[in-house]
Amino acid sequence: MTSSGSLIRGFACRHDPVKVGVVGLGKMGLLHSSILNVLPNAELTAACDKSRTLCRFFRKLLKGVRIVDNVEKFSDLDLDAIYVTAPIRFHFLVAKTVYLKTIARNLFVEKTLAWNHEEARKMSDLADQFGGVNMVGYLRRFAVTFKKARDLLAHEAIGKLTTFRAYAYSSDFLSSKGNPAALSSRGGVLRDLGCHAIDLALWFFEDLQTDSVSITSATRTGDSTRFTVENAHGLQGEFEVSCSRENYRMAEVGFSIQGSEGMIEVNDDKLELKSSDKESITWYRHDLKDNVPYWLGLPEYYREDSYFIESVAKRRRADPSFDCASKTDRIIELVTHGANARG
Amino acid sequence: MPNHSGHAADLVAASLENGANGFMFSVSATTLSILEELDQMGVINNLGLYPIVPYAYEYIRLANQAGGIPGLAKRFAKEVAISGNLRAFAMGLRGIAGMDPTSLMKAYLTFEISRVKSSIGKHAEVKSMFLHEVVTDIALALNLDWLFKSYMDFVMKLGFTPGFNTGNFSHLVEKFRSWNIDLHRLTIAAPFNKVGFQMNPSRGACEKTLESIPEPNVIAISVLAAGYLNVREAIEYIAALPNVRGVAIGVSKESHARESFRILRENLKT
Image (cartoon, rainbow over all chains, first blue to last red; front, top):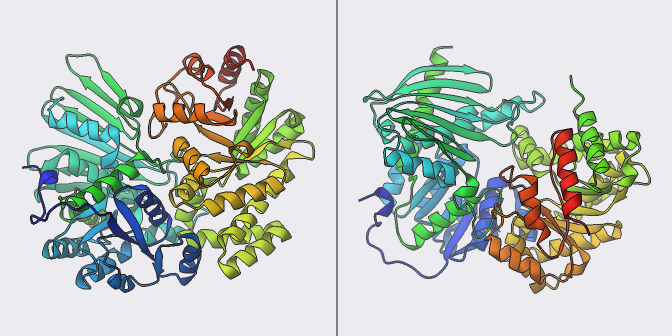
């Protein structure tokens, strides 16, 4: 049985809209709140931000939505699911409160799951203990190009995998005029941006999820990190992450994957399959049914939210679950410690 | 260091020579410099201007750098104060004091339009002022009909046609109808291309909605589907659509500008 198809503790499907509360009213909170408000099977019921100024603003903006400044005030709202879109360093605290105060059993947490692997592991344990559906917002799993790449890999379209190269670039911190502490407050370049490439690698190459994966090198220069990995079966990978790269106004993640019978190159917009014995095939977003019922930011966001809400409604496991996403936090921690150790 | 705004202004001028009659741009320091260059070149008065506010992606980047929305708000307030725009400053203060979204929006629009006006001289014409797709589609999703109405009233008082850039054309038109927003008084910029790229929920639904609107007040964007289509293929499709008032095309080379607008001129005769 695939993990995405398993049922959670045998509850029946529900037909009422899933009542959702959103914690953290920054840009991601606003984006998810908006999509939740158009999903036919969801109801944006409440929102929370610790800033009282933002609460005052959102009370005027979101009439009919209960706005509070403390997540514990969600307790009497009979919510089905919580979206945690607060800064990463608060994810554990918010999730712990939601579980222990029995505010809701279903949680969606924006990436990364936690501020460090220890907290990620504890969140995963809490999710196991309390049941319900849990998921982390790695939106690129919902991009048509990466989804197609995973299908090709699953069908061994390029044979036995040997090496891969992954990158994640943005220009977000190219200007030195920005607040130098801001990147640190977002958890550093790996947590802010590199996590997308790591999550996709874990999704593409399930072997990397075992404990046998080792970080063979790691270097950090300013806003960039480079590291290599290897698993017990000899698959070798290289990651390069930078958020001060020129010409990446929009962040981009991509992979070159080498197999015994060909190669796959994929990024957010395009996928190329180069087989050893056949002509190359290229697919663009345009070729891969990229339309969604409601467009906001990227179509991936709609698909991601729709999938989570559907999973809650059908009491079905969602991926990447906390357990699955905690492995990304583990790799980030291994790389960060490795890079620090190497100076 | 290359003069990027000078190069961009040359591209606009080349497009103008070949049949373009408008310039759609997100309001930013870079595009304001381009407007100043166009003014100095003496061509700006021949262009209809279509500013898009806010430059959402730039603000998101700035928010990342400044440590989130509170940091961005402080930076923006500082910019308004430094600009000496008293009207915007007063509206902003009122908005902050009451945490009033409408006053804050008006303060922001006043600031942005004053920046545009100070870059274009007295005779250039702002045809329509567009609300950026991200803001339009968030407001649409959250059913903020009062925000759309306030935006329209305010922009019309400034003497411009209110515009909405959206990735949800059908949904927007349907909602506007249900909110009794007069579709005659606005312009909509939305994706239209023969492969249905970014036409949500589907190409068919967007085409059907386009047929139903009362007059040609749509500007087709993404007509090349992010480079997937060539200009000739793109125009063949657009030319057959009803109610399209104009087409926006991005160009990065002078030869591209000349060829694109020549083909457009030949095929989109009005």
